[in-house]
Image (cartoon, rainbow, N blue to C red; front, side, top):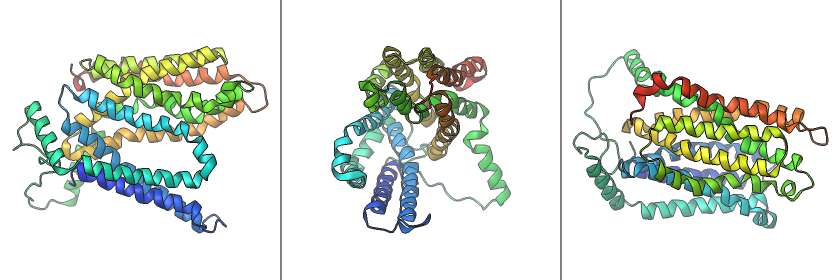
Length: 378
């Protein structure tokens, strides 16, 4: 309804407000006494607003990529978006000196300022004329008819003439019928990725403490953040290369191969602490991620009708939310029982179980290949 450009700018504005409130919660001198102190309530308010901003940001950003790319450039467009997001995550590894100099509160204000800069730069680059020309050029390349498009040339939804009012029950049934999860194949494809996505959660739930404890007394153990933050850098490098090589490959086949490559190296860590094994795990796992993850988001964005982009991307992100929640419930238990601080360690057993969970995704995708074929054509 707002259009992708306006939606992106609104999302960045909401993120700026949320981060400003979050930053103020720890630096404005608010009272911290009690579970519902002014500082805590301000912090929670900022977090909620930030979450709302991200909920707006992702559909808008992927919607823009969808609107301005053609079948020849779509794979690279979505790949670069995913790669640049990961580059931002890797740059955080250099903020240690800044955090020690200005504190975590000051660092939050730096992030707030960077969000404002992003808002202003986006508003300047993605002006209406630029967006109009880009969308028109992409539509011409795709051979789309502007008269039948659901969005206008500026990316906003085309308003349809209002028909006679319908009963509430009929509207509810229609909403359920048109919901993304009403398609069993789409729902299966989205939720079957949960097992392999647990490896994403282990990147920050398990890997930091694993490296710190299993490699204690070594340079790597004292600088475990380098191992943890190596994945985003590799993603930034590999994703564009892999996208160029696999642009014409069937999306479902990429998911089977990519998730298998991502899950398999987890078993290398089952042999126990080893720097070469750890390096191989990170590199091979990241290569597998580079194969399937950007194409998954591309598939969802291109499958979604233009007027239901938010709903489809929301459903696609629901499993990742569930993954973080589910993995968080058992990751700590495995850390305490397999690599307790100061106690006997069996890190191999821990990673063996994590590998068994992750490998379920490519196995299920392979078993369901014939059933899923109608949703994925070459």
